[in-house]
Image (tube, rainbow, N blue to C red; front, side, top):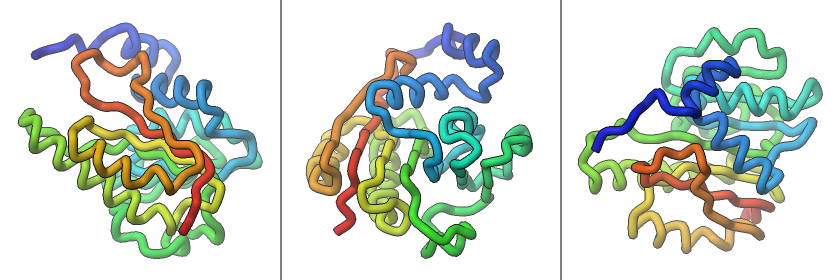
Length: 198
């Protein structure tokens, strides 16, 4: 099934000078759930091309910091943002915060990561779930006690079962499919608030 890539949100992102339409997903999630605030320390996993970095940088202000990690080469279009540091790294090879030149855990961890899709539904679902499981496994390294978390998930029975097992990791645990998500997409976002680092 095909869809028009250059839809309303694509055009709006161009007009608003954002690097991708996914900015509007984070904006909606944040407005509804109050995830990011002034002065926060934000970690964006798989940030490329960087629209979530653009949003986070503005939201946390001068006293906040935003760190982005991706296996893609660093996007120089973000180099003017003074409160942003970017790394070309594999997230899952990071073992300590010192690898990110950071001394303390983050207030918020964001992940809009998706696997390289094949178009084969079951394969793409499995690859997405493997990413999600890996992020959850590493969360205790990055996210402070009481911190907030947003992650993209491709819906599947396996994903639903895994997420059920993780509900206890947060005091508040909810799902949202933002309005700017394409109708054909099976993705949704998990919003965890008040991390219980056990």
